[in-house]
Image 1 (cartoon, helix red, strand yellow):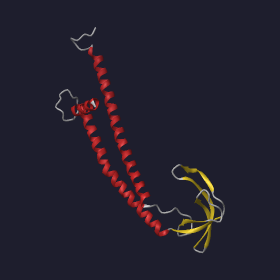
Image 2: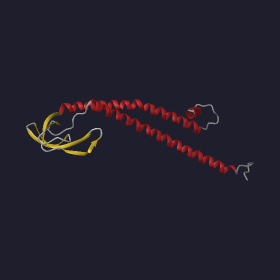
Image 3: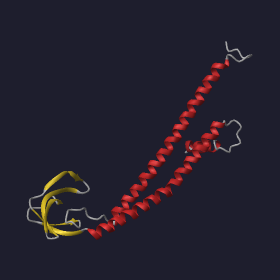
Image 4: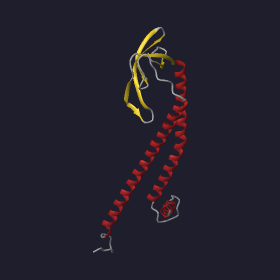
Length: 199
């Protein structure tokens, strides 16, 4: 708690408009940069939210278009399902795939479809197809679109905020290097000043 209070007091004392005559110009510039970066990161919040909203609207429009052009039909499995070990996760469990056959637009189509891990040849499953009768992904739900939009907004804000902080840290590092070199130069010149012999 004391450390937090000390940090707050220190930041308040380093404000750009401080009347402290011991503050260097570089200190005031650094304080202004910190305030600018903090303000920029806060401004990025509504911008990221607007980006997320636009992303959600675009995804919902795409889902609506997909629902108008795609539809579900029945397909018959031609073989037992094989388990996709790469797709096995604790959240979703094992999935499988199997060759299937279906009829669309008067034409018979075949292809590999996603199924449950224990489906057998001859079983009928529902699949999504496009207007040409080819396999297609199911239209995304509103929840899926919402989660994707939130993820996009968070990713945009995180990347932007990280970039701002990285630039700030780079500037602070450069200023620290400059101050150290300046102090080193002053120490080296200290013994050369008239009236101030060091040895």
